[in-house]
Each structure stands twice: as C-alpha cells, then as structure tokens.
Amino acid sequence: MITALHGGVGMLVAVWGAGLPVLDARVDLGPTRLGLLLLALALGAAIAMPLAGHLAHRWSDAAVLRVALPTAALLLAAIGAMPAAEPMIALACVFGLCCGAINVGLTSQATVAERAARRPVIARMHGCWTLGAVLGSSALAAVLRAGGDSLLLLPAVALSAGAMLTLLSLRLPVGRTGTDPGDAADPDAAASAGRTRAATPVLVGAGAVAAAAFVVEGAATDWAGIHTTRVLGAEPAAGATMYAVFFAAMTAVRFAGDRLRDLVAAPILVAAAAGVTLLGFVLVLLSPTVPEGARVVVATGGWALAGAGTALVWPIVIGSLGATRIDPRRLSLVTTLGYLGGFVGPVLIGGLAAGVGLAGAMVLPAVLTVLLAAAAPPLVSRLLRLAPARAAAVTFDLPVLPVSSTRAE
Image 1 (tube, rainbow, N blue to C red):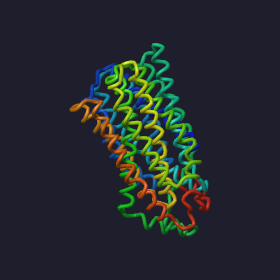
Image 2: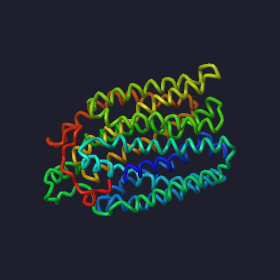
Image 3: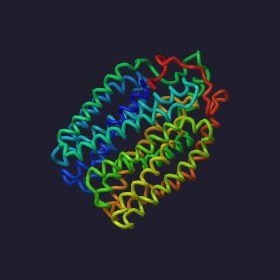
Image 4: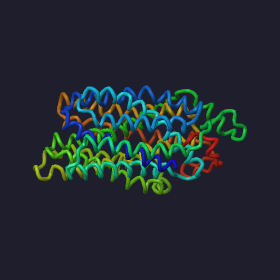
C-alpha cells in the first residue's frame, strides 16, 4: 500500500513538472514569474513540513495523507486550468502546503516500513514514485504531441491521480505512529526517541546533504523542460519528454537500489552516485554549445545521468536515519531541510537565470553535486554508527513492529 502511494504521488507530481513547459507556453511565465511560482510553492512547503511532523506524531501519517492528497490534486487541477500567471502563483502556495505534508507523511511511512521489513525497501518505494512520474509525464507528452488541449488534459490527469490516491489513503490504518518513548515493549526505540529530540548537528547535516540532492532533482523537475524549450529551442512536447527521461533513469536505478545497498557500503555508494550526477550536469552545461542537431541528444544524456546519480541519495539518507529509530518530529526536521532543497533550489536557479541566463544557472546544481560528493559519505557513516547495535546498516535486524502501532509509513 505504501509503495502504491509513492507511485500515485509520482504521477501527480508529473502533472506539475511535465506541465510547466505547457503552462509557460500558454501564459508566457518567463524566468521571473516562473521563479515566483516556484517560490510560492517553496514557502507553502516550508510552513507545512514542520507542522505535518507534529500532526503525524500526535495523530498519524495516514490522517495527514488523507487530507493532503485529495486537496493537492484539486489545487493542481485548478492550476492546470488557469489562463493567467497571477492566480497560478497564489494557488501554488497552497499547493506547496499540501506537498510538504505529503512529503513528511510518505517519508515517515517509508522508514517504519523498512525497519519492519528487516531489509532495504525504501529505494524500491522511491522507484515506484519515479515510475509514476515517468508514466504520467510520458502520457502527457504523448497526448500533447497528438494535439491534446492542455486546458482539459492537465486538470483531468490531476483529478484522476487524486482519486486513486484518495482511495489508497483510505486503506491505511489510522493509529498513532512513530516511536513512542512510553512503549515498554520496545525500550531501544524509546531510548532512541529520547536521543533525537534535539536538532543535533548530525540531523542538520543529514538534512543539508538531502537538500543538496533535492536541489539537483528539483533542477530536473522544474527546469529540465524549460531548459529544453528556451535554451535548446525545442518544442514543449520535447520538454515534457526530457522530464520523463530524467525520471526513467532514476526509476531504473532505484529498482536496483535496494540490492545495491545490500552489496555496496552506503558511503561508497553515495560517493559514486554524486560522481555520476556531476558527469550528467557537465553534459547539460555543454549541450547549448554543440551543433544544433545534437543539442537535445547531449542534454538527454546529461539529464539521464543526473537522474541515475541522484536516485539513491535520499533512500540512503533516510534508510540510515530509520536504523537509528528516529522520532517522527525529528524526522520531519530532516525531511523539511531536505525537501526545502527541492523547493528552494529551483527558485534559486530561476533567480540566477534572470541574471546570467538559464544555461549559466545550471552551474548551481553542478557545484552542489561536488559538495555532495565531499559531505555525504562521512555523514552517512556517522548516521550508521548511531544506529542501535542490533540494527545492522543493511540488514535492519529489528523486531517487526505492527503497522497499526507505527506511523503510517
């Protein structure tokens, strides 16, 4: 059920990411207004994520998801039908509130599920998320190429995904979830919850590493399509296809990711991922300089490598955190910092694009990838050392916790 929810949310997000080139072409957003649109989304998410962590701890992740998922779909449908930029920006802030709550709920669900499974499963869950994004964006691109009306198409896809997600969320058990210090049946969990009540440097570092990875992912989600149309001169349908290419590569790696996490030490794996991502952004940066007929091909290769490289960073970080039996409210801190990278990063790229052009703005995620390669391996090693002795980093040899007594994850 949790894996299916990830896939459905991926389809919903595809309406946003793959639809941005269409909205840009319809109302001529441009870098400045597109930056404001993304800033409104980021502000909403920043407000929602800490609050969602407290609500999930007090009630359940399922309760949070049951409200946020259908509301997000309705808002996204309205954004897709807007004929002007200003109402889009206003609705994007409220949409960001829902996205923040969804991110916290799904992340919390995933960490508890991995502990209960006693083996890595988070990468596969995120693989279903990206698979949903690929299917959604590919369907949008195909219908647009066939001459479909975006005013009808975008709302229809958003509402369909929202209906499916609502039905799935209704099947989640609603119970107070997460690690409860008063749970005498699990003293290790109680001790860990007590240790994680403060915003420690390790938790802040984990959030910063996740943020850097999400800036890279956000560059693809919100700017790969625009880069393809405005910088490389391709059609809007090609922009939607570029979005699909990024997530197709990410999906392939994530479905193999849990096996890779079993075979390769997490610090080595995250360093290799950063190297592949950097190579991808080198190709993206070079794509406007090659002959016109090869530009889209080079950019496609670059976004594919970037997708493959970023695929496992977040699963590795939250899997390492899950092994420490982190308290739901502290997990929301890491989630907030990480996902804010995904929301704020595209805004920063938009600001840079207004000054130096979008082609030059792609230097930002490339630089962050270098920092990610330097900071992520020692941070992941530190997290794994904090895990309880009986929670092996890759086998997660922990007692199985009943889903009804854990967070909705």
